[in-house]
Structure formats: structure tokens, C-alpha cells
Amino acid sequence: MARILIADDEVLERRALRMIVESAGLEGGVLVSEARNGQEAARLALEDPQGFDLAFLDIMMPGMDGLAAAQAMRDGGFGSPIVILSAYDTFEYAQKAIRLGVYEYLLKPASSDEVLRSLKRSLAWTQDSQELSRRAGTSLLALSEAARSLEDVVLDQMRQGALSGLPVRDYER
Image 1 (spheres, rainbow, N blue to C red):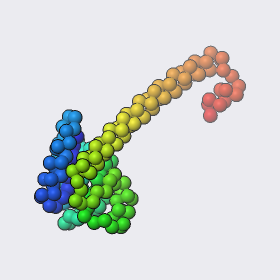
Image 2: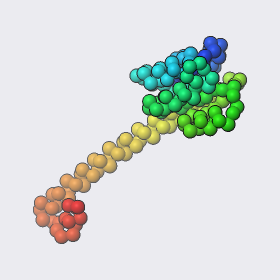
Image 3: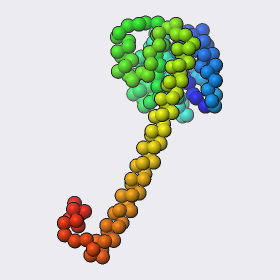
Image 4: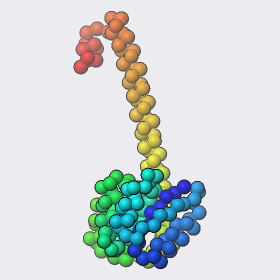
């Protein structure tokens, strides 16, 4: 099940985005959580034990804006994609979003198709990242086991006197 966080101070914007996300027909379904401002979004993102697969953040929200929320989320270890939704097409916002590692920057009003494409790209990125992490962990485990086996063989050969001279000194180093 895909877990999505939507943060926007406007109720109608949150509802519209929720309807678009829920209409995506994702395999396994979707669970949407909503936040009314950046502070609430950051708190939800960092306190939810199951985590979110994606966060949609509006830029202009009272208290803590979307970029500040993204910063707080990244600082707290939130590694999932963040998509910024903004009515503001300014270089300063886009530049800061890039520095924060925001996955996409959509201009409002974003069409349903734009949102759905962004949603699917973001979730695919998340799945690819999780698969790479899983494979890396498996590879490290296999390398560690191979190193232990090789060390056992070398130690046995050293005990039996089969290795001497330079190879032994190299191993000891």
C-alpha cells in the first residue's frame, strides 16, 4: 500500500489532490494523510512509524511553509520523494527546492495527469531505491561471508605451515 502525505492550507486543494491520488488505481491501494501546514506535515512525516512513500507539499502555508517543512523533513531523515506544488514560478523557490532534494516541482493549477505522472514516477523511484538498498545489503552480506571463509582457509594454511614468508607477512599486515 502506498502511503502519501498531502500538505496544503487550503481544504479544497487537499481534497482535490486526495481525489486525484486515490483515483490512480495503484496496486495495493493508497493511504493518504493530510496536513494543514508545514509544521504538521513535518511532524507527521517524522513521527509516523511506517513512514510515507511520497509527500506533496504546497509552498505557501501559514507558520512553516512547504520549503521549510521539506528542510525539516530532510534534516530529520525523511528520504522519500517530496513533490512541491506551488502557484509561484520563481527561480529562488525552485533553486531552494533543488538544494533540498525535492523530486519534482509542479506549478498550480497542476492537471490531474501531471499529478498522476508525478505520483507514479515518485513511487517508481522509491521502489527502485528500496530494491537497490536490498541488493546492496545482500551483496555486502555475501562479501562478508566470503571474506570470513577465505580468512578461515588462510589461517588453516598458516597453522599447517603451508604459507610462509611474504604471504604471511602480507596477511598479518
